[in-house]
Image (tube, rainbow, N blue to C red; front, side, top):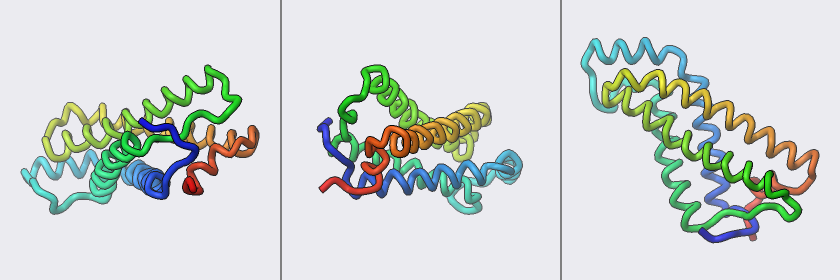
Length: 162
């Protein structure tokens, strides 16, 4: 993976679009248990009759896979100069946890919705909540970097690398 000074326009676009899709999926998850029960009772399959939550999660999953490919082929910015090793480690593992949850959450949801694996429903909900709150923490740290440390970290995800 290449080290860079900033993100590309594609990486920035994927970041914010995925963030919106995850936010939308989290806020539309109410009632999914009832929808799943109705789907199982009707023995439905295919893409018809999917609630908005399923569409948002599916779109996020596809874009997350694309984002991972782009990250491995294009690289990502390194740590800001002056960052302590502990903060670098926290950033590394925080991003790894975000990526893991961004893949795991919709994969579990697909297992439940399309595969009928009801046992994965609770794990999907827990992973979705963990993803939501970890993403909130991620946003809070980005804001802290921007407005307290004033090191420009947030701007890297708002302005493409030249």
